Image 1 (tube, rainbow, N blue to C red):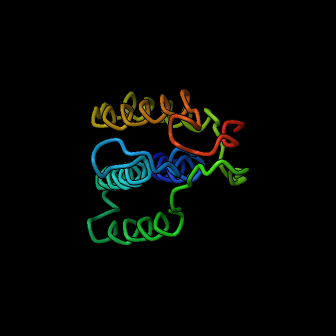
Image 2 (cartoon, rainbow, N blue to C red):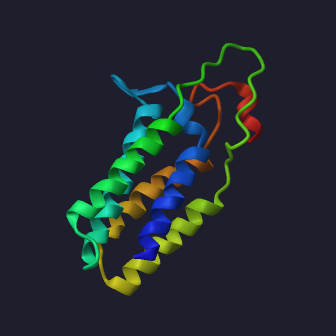
Amino acid sequence: MYLNIFIILLSFYIYTSSPIRFSNKHILYNINYNKLYNTIIYFIIIIELIHLLEFQFFNLYILIVPAFLSYIIIDIIKQTHTIDDGSFNPPPNYISKSYIPYIVILITLVYKIVTTKNYNYLFLIIIYLILFYTIINYSACKYDLPISWNRL
């Protein structure tokens, strides 16, 4: 139970510190990286809250409140996209390219699989591996962000 809450909190941190969520570059038709990151974080939180249903203390009605609160928190944190207009545009102070949260969350998910024998966490591992891959290969030019954001 505590690991699920830890994963949710670490997911919030990963979401807020990711520079890619500021990108307006389109992936497919009307989907850009900003919308994709918002959707992924909603999806991860919902999956973790569903995993909390395994514990007898939690029921569906109790989990509606954290789901609603997480939606409000993400909506408050959500930023509009940043445009590369050629001027000096420094990144916000809370943006980082640190790999440590990704490694910690991957280790936590592997630990959850080993201890609970619940292989539903493999889907979350795949999602976090994809997010980790995007951070490892991050370059401001790839995501139409200002060049001054390369120094993260």
